[in-house]
Amino acid sequence: MANQEDNLLKNIISHSKEYGFIFPSSEIYDGLSAVYDYGQNGAELKNNIKEYWWKFMTMMHDNIVGIDSAIFMHPTIWKASGHVDAFNDPMVDNKDSKKRYRADVLAEDAIAKIQDKIDKEVEKAAKRFENFDKAMFLATNGRVVEYQKKIDEANARLKDSMNSSNMEALKQLIIDLEVADPISGTKNWTDVRQFNLMFSTEMGSVAEDTNKIYLRPETAQGIFVNFLNVQKTSRLKIPFGIAQIGKAFRNEIVARQFIFRMREFEQMEMQFFVKPGEEMKWYEFWKEKRMRWHQTLGLGSENYRFHDHLNLAHYANAACDIQFNFPMGFKELEGIHSRTDFDLKSHEKFSGKKLQYFDAEDNQNYIPYVVETSVGLDRMFLSILSKAYTEEKLPARPAGGEDGSDRVVLRIPPALAPHKVAILPLMKKDGLAEKAEAIFNDLKFDFRCFYEDKDNIGKRYRRMDAIGTPYCITIDHQTLQDDTVTIRDRDTMKQERTSISNLKSKIRDSVSIATLLKQI
Ligand code: ATP
Image (cartoon, rainbow, N blue to C red; front, side, top):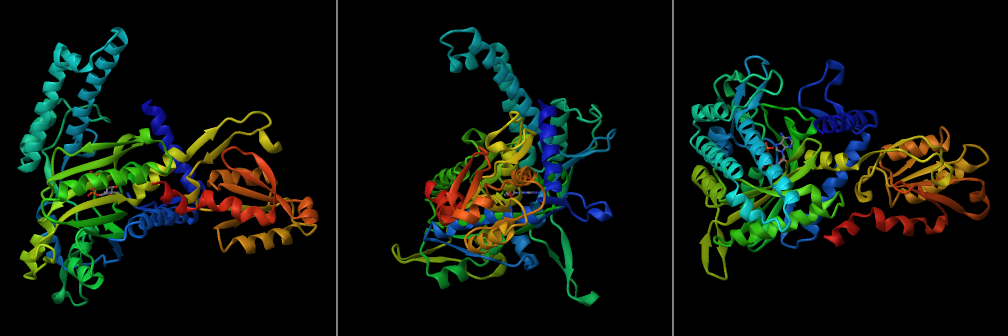
């Protein structure tokens, strides 16, 4: 199984490169670790994901507005937010493989393995006994009770060591959990050390004037420091939200797994400002809304799940992840955090400026509480690619007289596909190319279209399948006589003859982001 998953990820990586979705950064200089460039098709898909998020957040909610704050910010912001002192990950090296790992992740993975053992015992027993009572089994089966005790103890020790930054205790936990390096297989670990994830640089052209500044590790702080600017100029009343899409930078310790963990990535974040005491209601509200936004894409509801945080960050009083079933298993796709009034309060303290909201209904000033939703754009991209990527064995003669070769098709949700329609004259001559160009010039105002007149039609269909184009329109000799074309569906490969005048109405709904938004 693990091999199959590895292969899937490898295939996605090479497909992404071959078809212009994602290239390793600086490739001609042998690349730059954990940094990637989006190619011509990747940029389109990424823009469409952004549009789906932005429109959902801002257009669908009359109390949410979007901003675009700068990446560079005053360095004190990162002191106030806690990032200078506490944005650390504990790292540990295996002395034999020389590989570096996040110590907390090693412990979490080991705990998850014990949980797997419990799940297997439950599965076995459920098969063996009729009227199987799971709760009773979990409470009474000796082996399972022992495993659960181990998990609870390990979780408590992990939480304690992380909260108190006790790196020795964390190392001891790794030893006690008998964690072995997956590469060398040994348990020969260095001490665990804290490592700050922020990149820094200097601002100012004269050396003496230089000032250390940071590349933002999250977009959220740009929202917090503009909270009153936006509130006053928009005159929004609590509860209201501010959304933002932008780059963030983290010097990740372990930057493997393609675009899942990058050093330069993009976030789509929304901070929702609420009355103190009402944050839990809104936390639940946004959990549900965000889950629906994901599931509406149609990648399979079973591929999403909530995961509550056991180790809460310094600013949160509740937090969970929406995890997605990536090729490497269930991992965080989005974080939903109840951030209390930590950030605004801290910015008040460090800046000396009031960041309070006047609630006219209650006739009082207060610092709002905040519920945050934060999803990685690149992880969204990977989630879509990993479920869209399909290798298909075709029957000898599939629909529409295409040849029987196997195909790779990206079943990207049509509204997010890089191109919506390919316009393909059967051949260049006899006026077919001119007719096709006229159709292109008409449709291009409504849809991102792709035009191609080289190679045989079967090959062109395969290329469109490989980049996920939902529709191919073929112009043939009959088109010249009766203004009809064939329209081919990417997923079923079925072809249908239709008049040119019907094309827009036929395509529009199924490739429109508005259709998705209406389903949420
Ligand atoms: P992780 O535990 O995986 O490091 P995190 O909890 O630190 O993630 P947050 O700070 O909550 O992540 O960031 C919000 C979102 O930003 C994440 O859910 C993820 O989708 C995305 N994200 C965070 N770090 C990276 C990264 N290095 N590369 C790509 N996306 C990232």
